[in-house]
Structures are given as structure tokens and as C-alpha cells.
Length: 147
Image 1 (cartoon, rainbow, N blue to C red):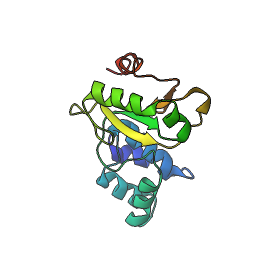
Image 2: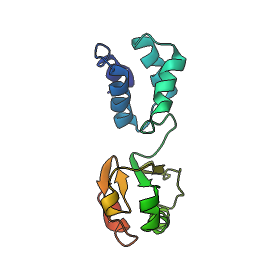
Image 3: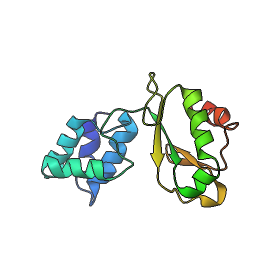
Image 4: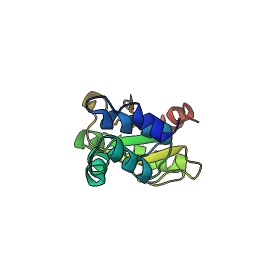
């Protein structure tokens, strides 16, 4: 589906721009500049306001990134529980550093603030699905679900 069609399908919904952005990003893995401009037109907003919405929320990205977004919690409980070792394992397995995407466009690594799962740290999410008590040894198995 084209981003214009996606955005148009939310035009009459209250708060539709956020839902439209979620849908576009699900399809394209980010919000292209043209999609933000189209959202501004459809929702009758200045482009700066539509861009402001797209950049305010951490779950949206206006730069291309991998299809499967892996976020690791960088809060104190995850840090103390070994997040640095999990980060190293993710970077090693994927061949990229935090903030980068794989060359094949399949994975992106990002930091996240607390994801509310402090009872089972360290925590990563992949496409918002949480993985609890992650260790370097479990990283390959988790990533295999998405390859």
C-alpha cells in the first residue's frame, strides 16, 4: 500500500496523524519526508507541526532504518544487570553498532528508556515485543526468530 493511501485512511479519525504514522512506519520502517509532508496536507497542519509530531515520539523515525527495530533498555536496572554485554552480543551478531542498521535493511539497533519490565532485566524489544532476562547467550536464538 502506498503511504498516501495509508495516510488518507486515517484522515477522519481524531488523533489520526499518530495512527497514520504508525501504519506508514509499519510498512516502510520509517517516515519519509514525503509522507510527513502528505500528513501535513491531509491533516491540514503546517509541515513543521507534522514534522514535530514525527520527531517528538521516540517510536517514530524520520531516517531510514532496519525493518526489525531492536531496542535495548538503558535504564539503571538493565545496566546493572548486564546490558553492556547484551549490547556487545547484539553488535557482534549483527555486525553493526548502536544507532545503525544492517546493510540488508533487516535490523536496526537503538537505545530505549525504561520499557517497564524491571523485574526481568536486561530487556530488549524487537518491534515492541519484549524479551526479558536477555543474556549474550540468548541473543542468537532471539535474532533467529526474525531472520
